[in-house]
Amino acid sequence: MNCTVYTNFTGSWASNVTAHNISSETSVSQNNHTISLNHNTVGTYQWSVLCLNFTDGSVSAWAPSNWTFTLT
Image: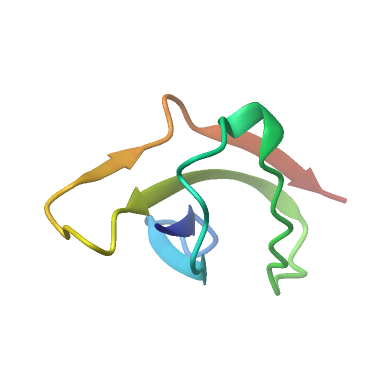
């Protein structure tokens, strides 16, 4: 499974970085992944994740909600 982080850094939703080969066999609460984003403009932003099953590209899902963070 590949998961892509989307943010609104530019004012519109856009993909920023993708984590490849994430195991779908482990529950989300047990599966932690660190993804670094390169953005340094002060502001409040939203982010979310879209995951895609790479063995069947028709199976995908967004995170159940968006999250917000602030760079100060």
